[in-house]
Length: 220
Image (cartoon, rainbow, N blue to C red; front, side):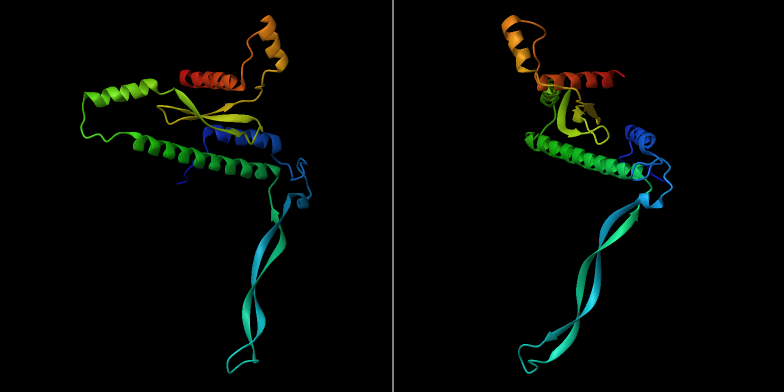
């Protein structure tokens, strides 16, 4: 029975479909249905190891000056060619490697965070009303979401934010494209004449966009 890889979420599989629609049936040079088989080969290098005969001369002892033969190891780089089915498979390979690294980072982050929370808790020697109250207070003070990291989407090359929704095991990737810092002219006009909306910092724009994304996710 085949198991689906951990990285193969429905959203990522949909992105691979879009990649195929853009780059499927194209050679490494971008030609559609290219008949030239050489355009599907990628130049690469590999390490070769071989034994070689070596002549040595004894420098001390009764056998000083006597030559003897032995074998050593020779390492050398050999140019080679690797068959690639097309440009889609290169992009698929890069995307999957990025997703696997992303998942490893997420698991490591959650593990470190869990360890910090466990070590920060006081030693509990009993169970009772105080424990429940302390837990409720912690839950009330904890924010709904938290930005864990920033990155770049390998498919769109746009900036994204990795957002953890507390109380769930879900992680959202929020698109941050189109955000701009307010210009000095905007700040000057608002400060002097009160024209337009108050300029918003990048941080405020990011928090607003993430908040909207989390709300849409929780209400769907």
